[in-house]
Image (cartoon, rainbow, N blue to C red; front, side, top):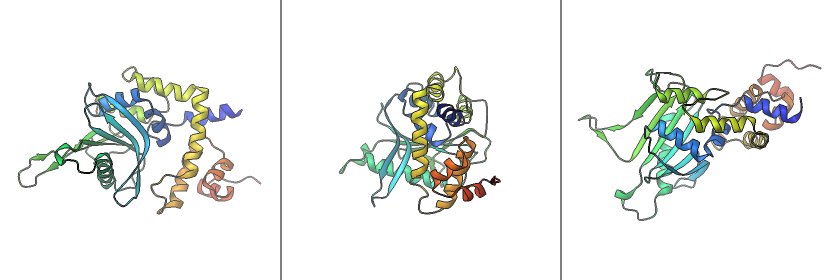
Length: 267
């Protein structure tokens, strides 16, 4: 197997729910617009700008990295996040991201009546609320009256665990496939094919993949760093990387990585 074939095999295992592949998909503004129109149920929605892996800072200077930052034609801003594991406080993460995004798009002295609306779309492999639905809209409610309050922050949770027959569910099912060709989502299908079969795209993405895992994400660097490396090792193993290559990425010995993966070393 030559180097290009090996790279293609690694890329062939990636899905849209995987961070690095999601990032590459969302760099295409047409893909972003097609997905947001479905998730936000707005067929006229227009995306003016999209930035994948955008770093923002809070008031204390701490960074947060958004998976995809989008500016819409009507002035709204959207943060799209993908989450595979169920090992986080997802609701507080959404709250934090929405707050950081709001702070970063506001100019000093802005009249609060002119603060732009923000929407956080949170896509998971699991049913976060265990309600047997693909889509959940979370709103603020006045406890005493039951009245929904609109403060400009929207939260939309979607998952690939439940297929309820909706168009959103159809899209989510494509998020967990290794091969996508769906006439209902032409832009997604086009970009998916490009990333999987173009030699230039495959080579470029494999390089980014290795750098991405070698550097580590900002999240979880201080806590659970070893567990994060183990998860990275498992993911790379599933993508077809050798133990030696994985060991170089996570900066551990071949013996340690083999133990993590429960592999038998051959002397």
